[in-house]
Image (cartoon, rainbow, N blue to C red):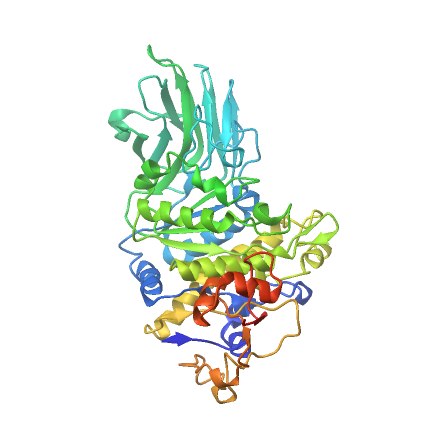
Length: 495
């Protein structure tokens, strides 16, 4: 059974959203879209079960993205909220961004000594410096080199399980690890060596971490992929934030060490939060993008067939004096791919106001002057909305666990907003208070003109061609389409 909810109803259901975070109405933030959309009962049940069982089975998120995720502004807010509600399963991944010659997380400083070379996922595959789960790798031949971390707020006392990812092969130098200036030892901290690196226990608070390279007779270099700080107890939520500035979707296709390291982290939910660097410079959808996204989905499902994958839309963008209208196309493409591949979808584009709103975000102090990146308080909105979108969907499923699909038609920014009679009939009105969920909405096929079709969320040209026994090329010719991108609400002539 499919479920549809009108926008009016959503405002009644989302009063929680405005209680925790205040922002000016001029931003046009639309909390009616603050849901994780899904296209099968199997996927939403899986997500709900993770939340329900989190006291006895750790729930692990891995959030990939570009510069907004590297700095950890929105993910810090989401992580904090998840920990407060479901309990902490640990801090998650950290990386030494200083040695990679880039900016660090807002949560810790990362410094280094010695000579380090690096690779970042947006730079492409380099056989001599393969990439791991963090999307960055640093390497040094210097036996006096160090990697140093200092947290702005110490990580509290806990029975921590630490995973340190490095190339533990025959030509790797050794490593001495210090937590708050205390040397980690095999007997005291139960160090175990693996092909991916080492694992050990630390049962005190954590304020600083120092990794000091130690010479080994056969050693030629030390290659670092990242470190995960988790709780030994199998409960709570771990939220890994793994952003790489300038990264696009293709960046997650070249993480050669990901299968080995993901087997250690055991992710349950992966968020692929890209888009800005895929459309910003061309203002169009690259012909290769859909295949890249689907290949990424397949790669993660090879790692864990049960993994939940969340595709996201990007925010409105303004570049070189023009609004990036391809943000609408990107939103619709991600929704379509999510539906086709039974993924989840988060529509940040419409939540954040949609087309031609980013300059207002800048004027109000929520976006930076480049009208691409947000400010701290802008990213706080994104992190809060992401968390509450998961919670809203979780609560929706708890109210009715027979839902097979929950999808919202994206806003139409190119023509007047009107109710599409092919999706909702007047008899489908509901009482906002007593019946917040519309149990079923019949599609009124008789109201559609025979030669005109209104595109719905999830439609593709090939699906429409099959529906009307025609071909994609004929559809494109009849409508003057140069590419395969279509959007909900658009009218197509059927040849």
